[in-house]
Length: 55
Image 1: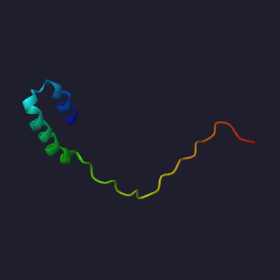
Image 2: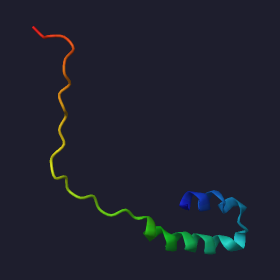
Image 3: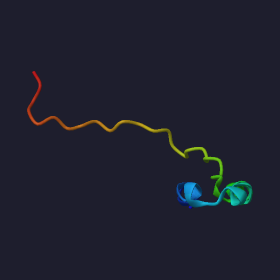
Image 4: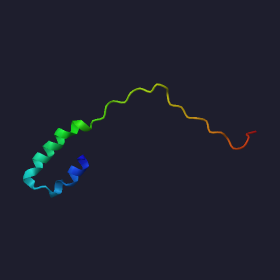
């Protein structure tokens, strides 16, 4: 949504640029993601089964 607004910015008349930028800054807090939660279990790399026996 913000990218779309920025893409159309060159087509906006110069007098409207400040209002478009203000609308973008007013809209920006809605797109802030919440903080990531902690993992219940730590990440681990699963062992890959070998195709052939190892001597």
